[in-house]
Image 1 (cartoon, one colour):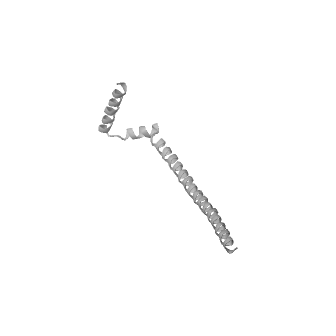
Image 2 (cartoon, rainbow, N blue to C red):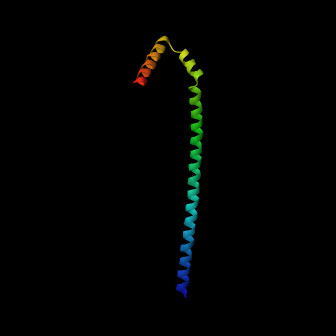
Length: 91
């Protein structure tokens, strides 16, 4: 009968090890998932901030302010480049 108890104990230990392994895997998966959620949230927040900054920098009033600060040479180069782009758009 001793062999029966030894085998029963081994099976019990094997079953408990399997349950423990599943619990560890579930904890690891949850931690990994939580990290991914946190990274995703941070990325979305950074994206929103970058969009807001870009939107502000590209507002008509800020563009006019920037054009007003150009030197005559820079303004002439900008006009030439705009003309080039308009011609390319018509082709």
